[in-house]
Image 1: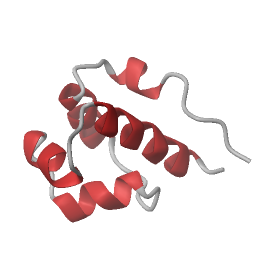
Image 2 (image 1 turned 30 degrees about the horizontal axis):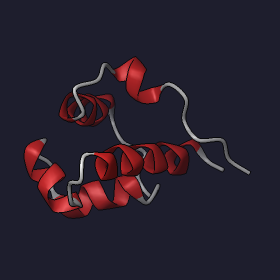
Image 3 (image 1 turned 90 degrees about the horizontal axis):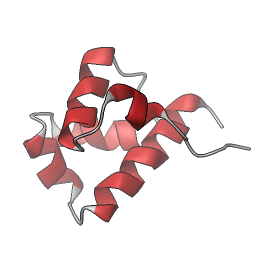
Amino acid sequence: MIIQKRFGLKIQQLRKQKNLSQEKFALLINMDRTYYSSVEAGRRNISLCNIEKIANGFQLTISELLANLPEGE
């Protein structure tokens, strides 16, 4: 599985653990909902700036966010 998809699965899991919709989380981190949705779906190769926004939204460091990405096939 490509890293974008693995990253998307990780942030989807984290978002669902916080019981937030994609729209509410995207608003929280000041990101367009459709853009965030495409990141979760693994269709974006996002920048470090946007990875930092997502990490901050989950109150994690970038390294914590990127640690233990789901394994792919």
